[in-house]
Image 1 (spheres, rainbow, N blue to C red):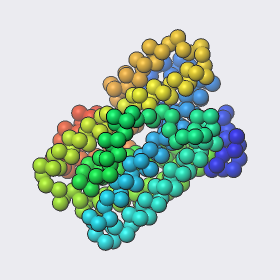
Image 2 (cartoon, helix red, strand yellow):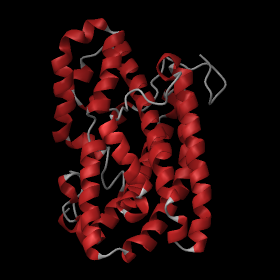
Image 3 (cartoon, rainbow, N blue to C red):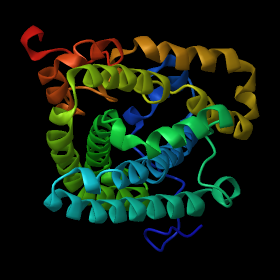
Length: 295
């Protein structure tokens, strides 16, 4: 199978991403799998990580950014066009990579693990298109893109042991994400202070709900990755309850949360949360958020 990123064959003998960045790595069930099963779970989850990037950058980030050119300074507005073009290139890159790796899954769609029912999809689409009224989305851009930078760095740190096309894609992603995080912070610097205190509190609560419902834990989408693994390894199907319990148990797994959202992974977002009184309770959703004076 040729890789869209390297021009060579995808190497299915290697992991596609660092093991510790996959959720089930932090559970006992993972370590009872044999080498082939662990590797395949890693590869399937890496494709799901690409799905997440495509969804966030094409379905969410671009509509969010389109709301702001007329609401920010001329210099920042000029940069948003480049920002959006880079997001489109990222989506195209990860889309091509998934189709090269799993054409049976992604040949006709960008998403397999990520599925939003109409009851969620249409309200979310409307909400994102109204992002100019909801600065919470600028916080979401910052924390997700900062996390993407950390993940890309982890890929590069293990580059010698990972599939080259996935490393190449993350290297390209990282090169642009540094600038994206800078633009995210500039947007917040201009927009958040202009937001009334009452509306800031509302947006902080909405952000906490959005993170809890869709971003912090692998729920429905995480289970669909497991289902793909079970389809390929029928001998594992009798342990479905064990797999579900493992995913649920991540809610109390400190190491999993540390590698998802923490001072190490998302330091800029956490530093801003610490400065803003509206986010004093964000630790209820992000367990690794602690104010530095109490650390």
